[in-house]
Length: 421
Image 1 (cartoon, rainbow, N blue to C red):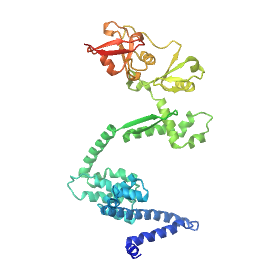
Image 2: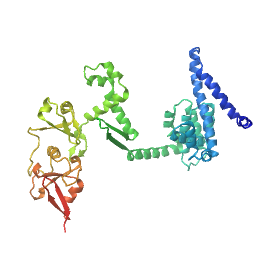
Image 3: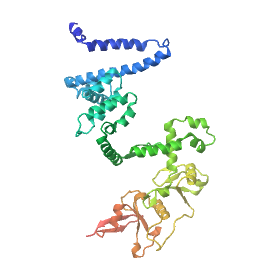
Image 4: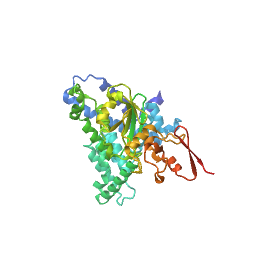
């Protein structure tokens, strides 16, 4: 019992225990008797109290880390030990431990957090910014000026806006060097963002495809502005089914409206202005029989193997840059004979329908990424028509022209290669 009394004798221990009791009392008290002014003022004060509690928590975790609490408990590190005992996500605990360590080196920011003048999110922005400042600054006082400037701005900015300002803090506190450094940093950031851009798409097996992407801020702003135009209630009301009430359109949650807008954007892309893909503009080809195109139910087949309903095919055939290849009718395919060497767009579309993959035996390279090859070379009198055409992927197209290999035509239209001896 004496040991327990000594353990709780420290000022911090007593203050935390008393604060928890008092906060519990306040959190369970009836609020109906408070005036409007009291509720509003106390809400602001409670937010400051939370910041102060976080300041104490961060000071304690920094001290625990110095004392190697995690190692003494057999954990990987102090953050992991703390996460386990407080049921935090480990990544969150590690991030807060890093902030605690950083606050140890930034006394003004730590003091502001202790006073409740800023939040922990503000503190993270400020310390990260100052820690990222170049090490070769001529004036050693610049980091301190930058920290104080950001603390002053934090008094009336939220953390997100403060982070934007923090990117250009050198221009404010050291304009003689900041402008040039900021310009170089911005150019480097843009290059890295463009080089690191990525996009993934994965079908969910239920008619939808889910995806993620990372793109530069410029292109994100362009996409966002375009989607907002399509998602605007006025545009939605003008393009939706007349039976859908305007109120329903305006009340749709933003993510769903933006999803609709993205689909409409893709349907309205001008394919004739897009880069070529396999010799054609990036245009979907749908194969559908004439009865279904008119009023039937049989689905249409996309050139990538997917299917769409006949109703959707009928709609897109009129609205989108989609070419219906109607079976059983006269198509656009032309025999250009000897007039031109390159296959036309119509011929490429027809070839892709009959040869959906590379025609090299064992190759499944999709047709839209293949080259159109003359079986009988055009330079030797071969015609540019479909009977003389075959799809070959870039690798096999190079091989068919490689004198080190001999090409064998197989039954069924495939070709095989073997090295000449």
